[in-house]
Structure formats: C-alpha cells, structure tokens
Length: 189
Image 1 (cartoon, rainbow, N blue to C red):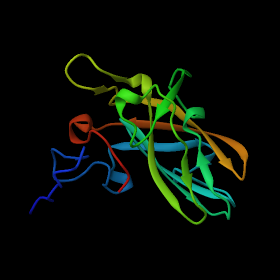
Image 2 (tube, rainbow, N blue to C red):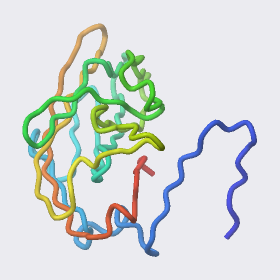
Image 3 (cartoon, helix red, strand yellow):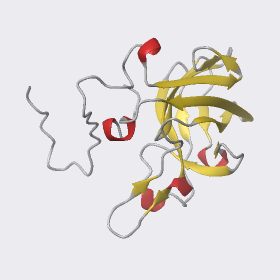
C-alpha cells in the first residue's frame, strides 16, 4: 500500500498505528476487548437523541469521542469552558477537545458551533491528564486495562441562547492487555 503524501505546509499529522492486523476499536461488539455502556441516560448504544440533537459516543482508554448532530433549525454551540470530565472517584476536570494544543490546555476555549442540520465529530479529554515531563507530552489514560470503571462527561450546550447542561455517565472495562500499545488515540472514523 502507498502512504498518503503530506503537504510540506502541514503543521501536524494524526496517525493511528496498530500492532496487530485488526483494530481493537473496530472489531464487532461481542468480540471487542473494550466493553462500555452508557448508564445515564440509560442506553444500550452509547447514544442519546432528543428532538433537537443526537449524540453518539465512542470510548477508548485515552479519550471520549463523540458525534453531535444538530436536528434543529437553530445553531448549537458547545461551550467548552463549561464542560467537564468526571473521573471514577467523582473528581471534576476541565476538558480539552480536538484541535486544542496541549500547551494551550489551560487557556479559554472558543465554542464549537454546529449549524442547523450539521454534525461535528470531536473528543473530550481532561486537561489535568496531560503533562510535560521534560521531553515529550504524555497523556494519562482515563482507565487502566482490566479495570472496571464508571466515569462521565458533563457537556454544556447553548441552543437558541438557552444553556442546556447534560451529564453522560459511562461504565467501561478493558480486557485486552495490549490495548495501550495497539491504539494511542481515537478520532472517530
């Protein structure tokens, strides 16, 4: 297979590599090495739908990916400075999302606008889990292999000038011992 050509003016590239021929994130659900469920609001499909929007999540140990679809005639704004990650012990942490440089993780973040009829794919990751030990940025996983955990994401949306806060609670367990080496980050396909 040929590799894509990366333009010289590119500032960064996101590359996902697997040590095995099959991506653990893409294997059919019954055989997946990561099992997750949404406990609140209760859903078998890691998704939530209202008359105004639909959201679906993808969970990996390194982050929470999601796709938000605007079903309304009004724009939806994701107010990132009012969103949080809730860790297994109940601690609340500021989040960053795709496109935010790690060095800028503590700065105010612009809202993401989802126009009527449009969708956005993004991710949420706690800023406190990012560190610079001296040579390269590191990301602490949301949970470790074999651990059964409950955690959540608190999202604040603005729809037609009205704020709507949503708390999504998840439970996950990973049984694949090689998961961290197989995948480092998942931006939804």
